Length: 266
Length: 359
Image (cartoon, rainbow over all chains, first blue to last red; front, side, top):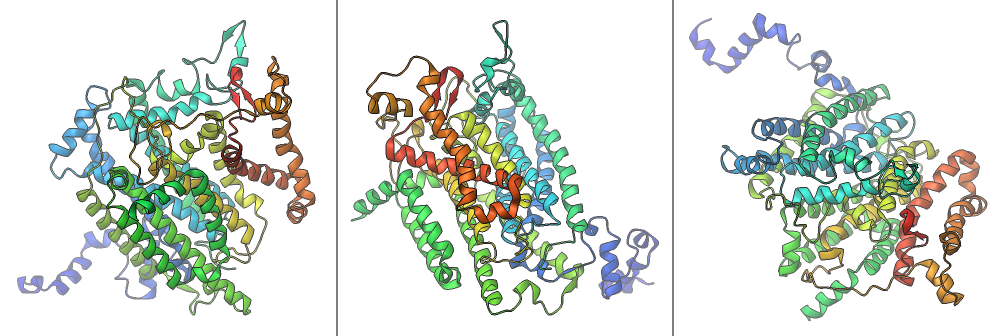
């Protein structure tokens, strides 16, 4: 093979496809016939979320709106931008706010926080619209009941992810939004110190549930939104909730296939 | 003329008018087949865009709508409208087909199955690229908000929860935190999860349709549009300092003091109707409230099973029916309390502040 042939993109491509390195990664020819097109999907760990063939009606954009796919994609965007943000951000009362300012002013191409925040808003909306679509097509009906339940849990986790992330900039907007939100926990029946029934849980006149032992305290790691809450929300936001969400997403996607793929008329 | 229009809109934006109007529009629109075709939809969209654009000229409207965190909510309102139209227009189209004895669009594809590569993978790829472009442009032009550093001693007025929880915060106007912040949200989640186990209608699986699932779709959309999206919009755009109501063109005046005229059912019963004072013990004092709540939760279900919901009771059996009707009554509890508040200034049906037990 001489240099001139290498300059011809077509010949260069076919040369690359003949090398042992390329063949070790991709074990099929170009997806130009039915067999290879099926193999592309079957032999790729990412694409094999899909079956090799799907119902025509199920992939029409006006049927699915691509909202489930978009939600998953935004989750990935959030993971990547979030990882990059973690390089700069320290979840302590001293540093959190200045780190956020630095992110916008000192870091080159400082729109990472914008991508992350607007992506989060967008994800809440796409998840709602995905639920709307699934409802309107009756796709929760048997045999997909279980997957609808998983989907509702994922919706809750999406909101919790967004909620825990809301505190991290440690500005007035953050701390007071979380204060308003977490004040609700104070009123949990029996488990919050201002909830109905909490005063019944007393031993010899000593309340078991008080402002230092109720669910709100467990959530915030303190009696108010302070350093403890910031650390807890950071860990929940970056590790715990994404971990659970990833497991549930795996089940969600796997069950789509096990329950017969994208829904369609019987 | 403009001032008159603004005052008019400010007035009808008050929750009692806004929600009532929305409920009427919701039911009229849902059953008005002609609406779910392209032309009327374009008129509605045009009207919405025109209203929005003209309103932007007003400084008060502009300052609240263009707050960075509120921009996505405006977008969401348009998106929810569009996608409900998209699903309902396909549902009515399929209904016409079914009415003619044909199969729905989804069952009439010339080729029933296609390869994922290229047909699906390319669609997804294009969607992802378009979304990425949108997100980057959005991020370049709209800075993420950052206010003053956190200060636990200085609470802003109004303090608002993140926007997707503002529907719940708006519920706090009508119910105490243990209901609006804990019980109702839990019931929303449980209720959503219960849908596939309550809905025994075998029809309408895997295609858009309205006539085969009228009741289910009406209930779901009522919850989603009126009790969720609309309350979020109210909480975001129409609630200012001290969580007072402010019209879209109204200045957020911290000094606005609405009259405090709300009174409890116990006061209605003992003081106004019986002309005696309030009894000392809470059990007797709140007895009328307990009776009302128990009537709502315990006598309505069997009553409905014999009348309005008889068909469902027979189809679902007692257990499923009980779950469904309790969920429905909980959902209905919000509009019921709203109207009790607006019509009778009712504060609490049961009020036992000593145990934090107010309904």
